[in-house]
Length: 242
Image (cartoon, rainbow, N blue to C red):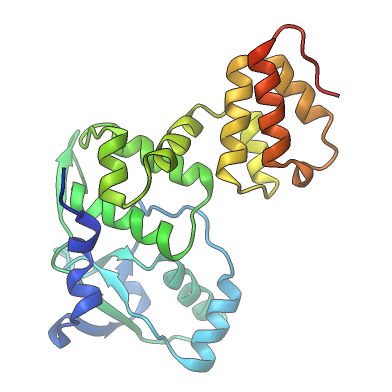
């Protein structure tokens, strides 16, 4: 597959904004559905910036639905900021860009983003403001499943990422609740987290020992997890972390 779908999806939005596709609406005219990003950071800071300096980037939306409302394609963080501003008593108009390149397909009776749109949504979020490792992993899993059914090498090419990057987050699909707890503590190093998954594959008891011996997950390092993984592979039954 040679086509870079990410470039195609955002060509209209990033290269030449059509004035007819730019407009302002109230908050109740836009909505989110199955956004890539599940958690948003620094919303109060973004809201304060919008209030002080205005909205610098429009929210990208699909064409209006049958009710005249717009489903968000990209800009969920800005939507959350406007929601916060409304709670604070600031009912501000929201600039939107209507992207006619956003497409959908039907899968199991539900409209989902088509391949071009889905890859664009994920790529945009990853490149502009990194998602949590679990979110990236979940989206890699979606691309590998119906209706997309992509192989890792295809995902790497479409997203402009290395095969190693895709393989890492594909592996993280197999994370356990204990490993996800490490991420939830604030550890966002995808390689380190993937090493924990591999340690668990080699010897689950060793992973338990490692995590129980770590008083602060923030002190875990790639070097340490690589060392434990290498020793576990050499002799998984005899090696004990201490």
